[in-house]
Image 1 (cartoon, rainbow, N blue to C red):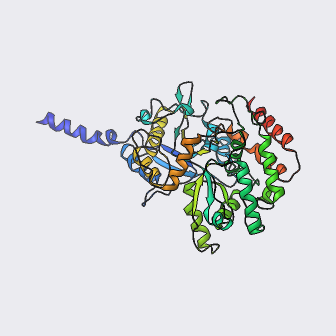
Image 2: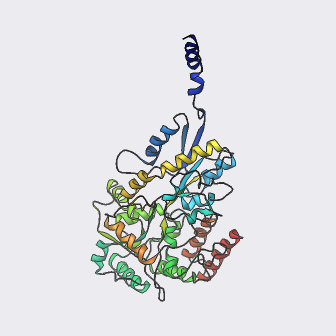
Length: 422
């Protein structure tokens, strides 16, 4: 009896030491570009935290948001310069791709337990190592203001051409006299540049050849025709005046107000911007619209569209314990339940275990554009993308201001990109 009592006494004394979590005192930092507006009261971070805390109740999670003021990687760059890399980086690929490198990212092959549920991770794999998880995203299409089409008496033909677009643009100009325009244009900074860059595909130009990101061919593949088209739009008054000084913020408001006849847009953007202009009294009600492919230049069969999504990257901290904990959070924030919520807000899932039917008619229109025309390869997952991206808008400004010829501009653009790729 005394022996049993002594054993129990020892267990009571030692229990605090055994019950103390080995993860106590560990902190992880998550840098992100914002919470998604899921239906209901919870976002992706809420769903992840609920599961994460069951596994690691004593781990403190710190959330920091990316500075989106200029669309660059300034927040990550500053944190790295200060020696304070976040354990997890969650952002759009236009910024995050810079860090999908073996020098920064933790290989997730052996850490994320449901890694085999992803459809295709080849774009995020380097030398067999999966360095990032793709967040659900969506593609853009050319959204058409059907109210304007009715007023100018124009119906966009199937698989329309640049010539068709110009006919439409002239009708808009004659009907509205410079108060509404055929399409949008801006070049004040790099933010939202994908809305403009998709025009290169209309003219058959390519940034890279068959996924070979070692050399840019935007000039070699006929990109000058795109700049020639931009200058024509400017000279004819088919785009807003002073486009070189406008931003993507100006662009989206112009669309929501009903000032642009046909321009690049994402389905998920429509309702928020309609709501903005209505609340601001710039418009009383929504107008009818639909999505169509970008018009094609003569000889171009299909115009691929821009697909935008984000990525989750876990920093390789060199601490096995911290890496394991951070990877678990990455697993939960992109799990089946979260991706089902993304699907409800018009983002296409990329997991095999998430099967959804597209119910939104506009999302279905854009999805059909992707099926029929494919994705425009701009090197989005290449680690140099964030370095090459800022090179365009200063050149585009000069194009729109008619300060440089299309040929000189596109050759300069290709040269600058290739200098970064060397």
